[in-house]
Image (cartoon, rainbow, N blue to C red; front, side, top):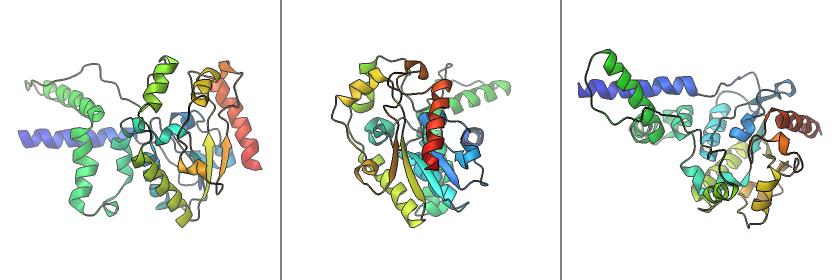
Length: 276
């Protein structure tokens, strides 16, 4: 019975993964890679040849896995990469899509098959708190349908953390939670891996910084921030829209995420800049 439970647990995790992986179209050779800020662009740049392969909550580790996955499927020409500073901060080490993006890896990405199986299936399904609660709920419901009595700690109000801090937090509280723990060498290393794979594969890399609402931008601007390595070099083109909509608070759904109106105007700016 215990073995049945274990296999059911992993099977449910795999089923969850299959339903939550970001869709991708290999007919494109230019891709937008980022988190929820990039996700607001939706598919509005497809007519200009860019497929949006972004997911809410993606960290640089998740983005690297996606880019590596793409290079094995298609001859990638250009990556429009989100390079906002918070992506190299420690809070992103725990708020990410590690348990989903691992599905873009293969056994060839690991030292041996056992390590691959552990990292891809055992670790996320057992140790990741987000997926653990989801699988518990599925398993609990399954056993109830089979009339099997089970005693299991379960949060009935499970929600998937998309890697974004509560969008309605006080500005200072949000800033403290994002920037208070300092720089992540782990995520900075994954950014370096992104730069390397793009250089090795001769992929054009363009950085993009997304608009920030004026009140939150003022807090960030008055603090000594940690620049990521992408922004410390002149080797790459960076489209910096962080202050583009300072006087347009109605373009934002919160401190640093555009609403549909803001996304519409940003897309118009992007179209012009990408054509130059």
